Image (cartoon, rainbow, N blue to C red; front, side):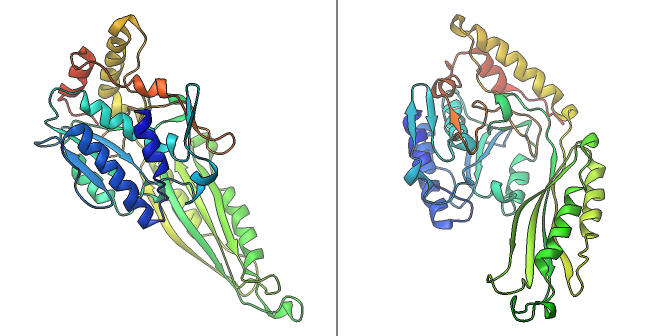
Length: 352
C-alpha cells in the first residue's frame, strides 16, 4: 500500500493541469486493474463497477491543490511511521485505501468506485456523473480524510464566488486622477464581504485569492477576489447569495460584477443516522479482530448519499506538510471473513 501511495503522489495532479491529470489517471487505472481485476472507464473521471446496479458507492477525487513541480522539492518519503508528499493526505492515501478495501471483498457485485478530477474546483464537470452514479445506492462512502481523522456524518454546504471590480486605467504618476482605481474599490468590497458571515449560524464568508492591476505605474482597471462560503443552514445560502450580489464599490467610475453562487447544500447529521449506526457497529467488530484495536474506515464527506468513511490523521496543509501514517493505512484492510466487512457490504437499507 505504501508503494502504491508513493506512485500516486509522484504522479502530480493539480486540478488545472489536464496533461498531469491524465498521467495520474493512468497510474490509478493501473492500480485498480491490478488489484480489482478490471479497469475503470476512460476519461478524466474514473468510474469502476463491480457489476450490477450500484448499491454502495465509494467516492473520492485525485486532483490536488499543489502546483505542478511541488514534488521536486517535496518528494514522497516515509519517515518512521509517517508518509509525506503533495496530495498524500488529500486524498491519494484514501484512493489506495478504497481500492484495497474493495479488494478484500468476496464479491464486488453492487459496488462502484468513482474518482473525479475536479473536486478542488467545485466538481463542476463531475457533478452530474456523481449524482447519476449515486442515484438508487444505499450508501455513498467518501474516503477523503476529515479534520482530526474522525467519522464525519454531516457537512456544511458551500458557495464559490468571483467578485470583480471594473475601473479605468490611467498613468499612476502623470495623471492618476483620470483613472478609477479598481483595487481600492476591491478593498472596500473585500471588507464588506468579510462581514457577511454569521458564526452563530455556522456561516463563514472568507476572501481567499485576490488579483489586481497590470503594471506598477498603472492605475488598476480591474481587480477580483474569490470568496469561499460555508453554511450550516440551508436558508443561509440564499441570504449570502443575495448579500454578495449587493456588494458595491464606493470609488467613482467603478462597477462590480459577481460570478458563481451556491455550490453544494449542507448535509444534516440526520441524513446519516442509520449509516452512522452501522459504521459504529462495524468499528466495534473491527476492534475485536485479532484482539487489537483496528479502525477499518472512518471519515467521510457524503455528497449524493449520506455517509462517511474516511482514512488518515489530522491534516497539515502547509507548514509542516500533510502527513499520514502507513500503519493507519494498513488498518483499513481486514480478512475477507471479518464480520464487519461482510455486514458493511451487505447493508441494503437506503439512508437519507
